Image (cartoon, rainbow, N blue to C red):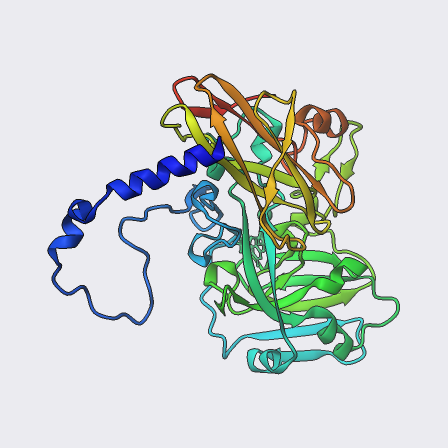
Length: 395
Ligand SMILES: Nc1nc2c(c(=O)[nH]1)N[C@H]1C(S)=C(S)[C@@H](COP(=O)(O)O)O[C@H]1N2
Ligand SMILES: [Mo]
């Protein structure tokens, strides 16, 4: 079946003889001159969608996931979440202070930091509030507005442990308070646990310095953990014995459980996936072959398996994963599909190397209740109508 289809596509291109090349054949006047910094084609339109609060500096903007190829999010489309706007920081003026329970407090310039041994790694970043609307029936109409607070970049920086070692963390130290240089001085208590061995003081993103929106000139990157702890415009690491119970780890980014207790410091983002094609707001052009594709990720390491259902969860088929599958990074999955033109209910289910399998929304709610707006990782369902339109669906 697949081969027939490929032959048809080839026949189609053979039919496009030279005479049919149209305008390209008539010759063109010279194009525009060189440019110092590239822009995408004017025909390419995807943009972040913005959700603002009453103050224009606070809010979030979401990555157009359904328009992305591969696993890297272009820096210009990386999601944003700011609590007090994007500060304008001169890197020459910026300092990182490391103090508290350390033998040798340090005050580092960006130049000092860039002299240290560095590393580049590809990791996803996801807001703990991503897809939070799924807990209620308030989810966004498309992949961008429901799942777009997640992106994936190549980050460059200095391993945090090098700098902590240089400062000499005292044995009684168990936490550090990371603080941003933005107007709200955002703070998070970060546990000094094994997982933090992978943390970076990041100054690079996709081959360039960080974008101002992502924390220029320096941010904390803690791969696999919720976005909120990855403090941007990082200016201080205050090493302590206890957490500080800051606003963002108590009033926010915590989960009120059915028994009335609150889970806090649930940092690891659990396995999750979303079909990005076909997804909400798209329309299939008619019956025939398509490639179902989407993204999966897990804060616990690598994705080992993604399954796709086309019949609302009765049968699951294994999707192909683009190789190599990276640790704590977006993983692209694909599955060829011949649509028969009838209504269908599609979804994806991710498994990670810890053996964790993404739960259904019902399974998740059974354990966690519906009091939280955070840390939703249930299976995401899309409904395809016979006319080809795609909307949110329930399993
Ligand atoms: N200083 C500071 N750091 C911050 C924030 C902020 O508002 N100020 N927002 C946090 C939240 S809630 C998230 S989800 C991530 C978002 O990072 P991004 O804007 O680069 O996507 O940054 C975190 N770090
Ligand atoms: Mo966030």
